[in-house]
Image (cartoon, rainbow, N blue to C red; front, top):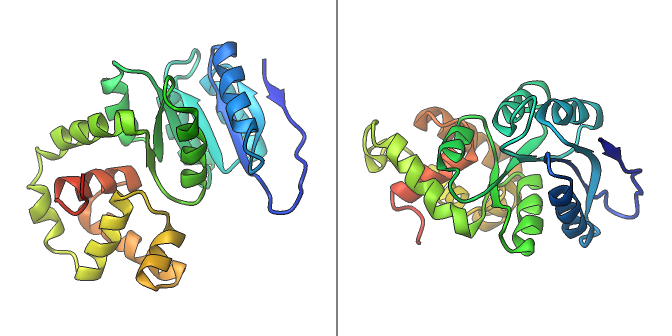
Length: 229
C-alpha cells in the first residue's frame, strides 16, 4: 500500500524522496534511517515499480530510491520510465550482492547511485544527499564491482585513455572530479568556476565520450586513471 507523508517546511526545504520496495520491512527500515536526517523527507512509498512511477509523477521528488526486484514493473524499468517522464528526479538503485547483471543494466537507465541494502546506514543518507546535489554515489561495497562491470562493457570500445585524450585539460579536471563523486556545486568551488560553466563542461564531456550519465562518466574516469583508488 502506498503511503504519503505531509511535508513540513522549516528553513531550507528537505530533499523529497519517493521510496519503492516490495518488502514492507525493508521500506520501514529505509524510512527510519532517512527520517534520522531532518534534511530528508520520504513523501511517498510504493510496493511495486508501476506505483513508484505514478508517485514520482505526482510528487515530483528530487530522488527516487528504487529496489531492483519488484513486481509489476521492476526497478530498472521504473528508473527508465522515471527518466523519461520526470527527468528532474534522480534515481538510486537498492541492490544486494549477486545482482551484477542488474547493476550493469541499470547503468544504461540513467541511475545516479547504487546502494547496498545491507550496507552502512550512513551510506544511505550520504547517497541521497550526493544525488540530490547533482552528483553520483556508489556504495563503497559495490563501487569496485560496478567499475569492473563498466570496464568490461567499455573494453569493447577504444581504451579509456584514448577516449579521454581528446578532452581539454579543464574537461579532464572536471571528469576526474565527477569520478571522485563531487557534485556540480563542489566542482565549481574546487575549480573556481560558476556552476553553469561546470554544467556546460559536463554536457560537452558526455557528448564527446558518448556516455549517458555521471556514473558512466565516473567509470571512465577510473578506467583512464584520472581518479586515485
